[in-house]
Length: 456
Ligand SMILES: Cc1cc2nc3c(=O)[nH]c(=O)nc-3n(C[C@H](O)[C@H](O)[C@H](O)COP(=O)(O)OP(=O)(O)OC[C@H]3O[C@@H](n4cnc5c(N)ncnc54)[C@H](O)[C@@H]3O)c2cc1C
Image 1: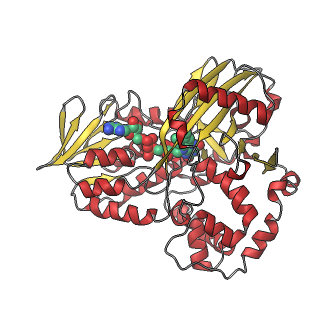
Image 2: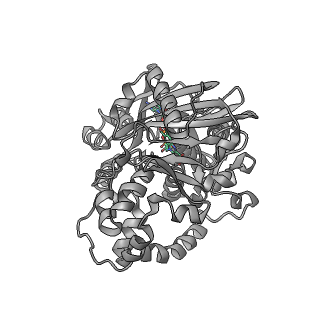
Image 3: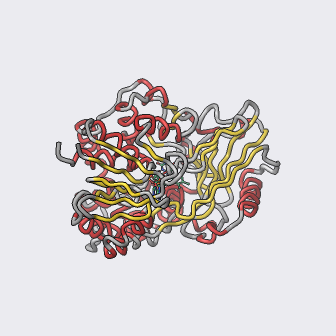
């Protein structure tokens, strides 16, 4: 019987262990997790009737991997569809909330959308291709869609997903479907239209579409009790095999892999699967392969702070998912999420639930700010943007010093180098959100395909 140790019980590690167990039921699995509970970035808390998220709050319907995992793990009872209004989003631009989604008239006539239709129509016939092997998001979007889409829509969207800088992030790695659409069809719009049918066929063949009654209800989903319940659900398949409070400090290859914990305990395994953040993976492997460690250290991360605020307030205040702010507006925060507008039941009756996101590439100092400073920044933002000048009845502050890996220009080459170096070590497997996408769906998908690629 082969023994496999999974290091890190975030969604990448848990879903990898889950799919691995399904494929190889007879093999011995151990999962080692530094924290006292599984989930990694998943960080849900229920306080005085508020369900707060300090990490991810859900997934988009079109990702499918989340549904696949629920289906395979008998987890449909956990699925929580977002409210209808969750597809209405906003951008703060020119001193007002600009609606995107929901009402088409409000969307089309918002200042943020000025010239957007013309730019999209024009893109189909542009002949200004780029011959470089990679390009920044900013350069790609300016070339294809012009300044308004780049500075307002793209920049705000990238704040929400990567908390990143569009002049540094790679289009090839951050939005591979856009990059490929232009390469293969000479136009992003034409390429995306052509790719839609192919993508659907691929999904059906591999991660399969899910005509479950719940999956048509919304475009955004989480799990009841907060997204961390998904981690607990998966951890339930590994009751005695998941060891929490178990920080791995090094890995050495002798006859077998020797896994050393901070406590001094040593475990042996035939195979090891690392799904820790890139810098941690680097530290763990630094003695075994300094070059591989140096390659992993090339992936930068940015900090993000999530300040959750619960107010006694008429929930009529909240319709929609929330808003993001493009850099050109020069504001202190990334945006505000309307949690009671996104999901039912996340605040007691007569109360509302918000999250103010602070930090990102433009504000690296966020990681060093105190809880009090962050709370003050969040309350000031609530007043400035939403006119809410009240004391919250509950608040939480969580800082993620290394929140999100940045797929900067040339990221694809760093990943190729890491995977090449890693493959020289038999029985070493490298997973995590630094590799094939940072979304929860991306992490699950990446783990699924890793297991699929293993021999029977
Ligand atoms: C604030 C925030 C909001 C986000 N919002 C969304 C969202 O709404 N939707 C979405 O799709 N994505 C979102 N994301 C991204 C997504 O949550 C992450 O990319 C994903 O959860 C990462 O999962 P992972 O398992 O790869 O890594 P992690 O979650 O980082 O897991 C790594 C695990 O390894 C453990 N570990 C670390 N060091 C050691 C060690 N030495 N020994 C043992 N274990 C160790 C950690 O404790 C952790 O449990 C968000 C991320 C953040 C930070």
